[in-house]
Image 1 (tube, rainbow, N blue to C red):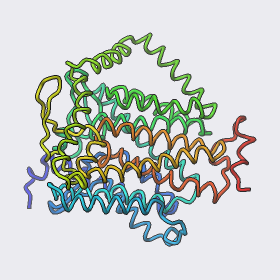
Image 2 (image 1 turned 180 degrees about the horizontal axis):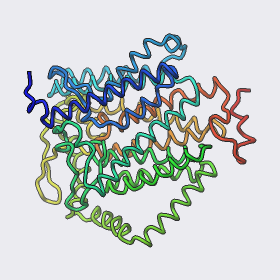
Image 3 (image 1 turned 180 degrees about the vertical axis):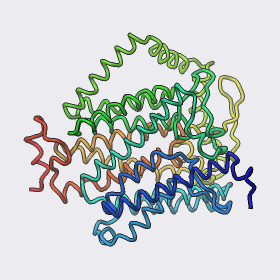
Image 4 (image 1 turned 90 degrees about the vertical axis):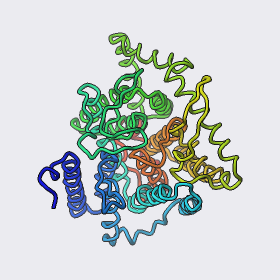
Length: 483
């Protein structure tokens, strides 16, 4: 039996805190399922999947960890299997062939991995944490209203994360410090992320500021969509306040990639978005100019980041060059063996490659893989990269085709899905964003929505439930109804 001192050590207290949270989450899912049915639990599940950090976990017999995300996934699977209505849905699982091909190839890469245990964990995580989520959402959504509610759950999770991000930036306290500390690929969790050149960079419940910023680059357009389609004043106020927190947090991540991804994500709405959303974006641009005038320090920060990026001698400039050198080193490593060129070194094996090179004439150890493209290439080979690349490209092309085929206002969701996919793909070139963390769960949620949205439109006429009947859409809503 542990002593009282051992029982109340910080680690024990933190694990107890996680257990209490897990019980609360589990009870909430069960209660909502009993009251609203299984489909009604999906928005709450999306909220929890986005909110909780990777550190929210409980070790089981020292063999594996039950994270809060995995608990949510397991609870959803149990509730799904216990709900006859959803087991009897006639819809086939989309993307079966692509998913099976990726899983089989990852299995081959795992068998030949130089870090078998890590690769096996990555394979199991792919199956449970991501494909499991995709399966549940793709098989269970039968109502267009659920799609919007899932957006609400995702945005609510990101708003809470942004609140923690603002506290982190101005209060110098990280919410992750409440969870068990652990060493991960970016250092010790639960401590403030300090950058010599950029100061405190907020990461909230995410594993790195870039990952948090990437999720916000996907969440901000989603929030604008919800504001434009909300009818209640309280709901609009909540999302506007949340939007302010999200913009503050993405700025405080000091991450160039997410800033660029957000700008690219807003452009399609300026050309193809609803009148309300276009007006919101224009108003935000005007507000941004006012902020730059009133607070010149903001503009100075942006300019300094740009200047440092193009300066080969600065840390930001070397970080930028790091990614290009990384591709060369990965290709050189793969070319050492024909087998490795085919199946790579195994999922999550990059740290074991011990790559080293030079940047600006200085020797450097490449201990982190700042690109998901390079990671896929190193860990699953050329064929693995081609499989995943084709898989992701097909989903984006499908989303674009949906936008072109569906008339307004239903195609507005298609724009949102397109820009979310694009933002994630763009960030794959800047950071190892694929394969771990809440942002990867967000990607698989978007994939599920892309694959099932056309069938939802076909099965039920798009109505004011989908988008409010404002003047520009009133005469076109009927166009979504089946002929």
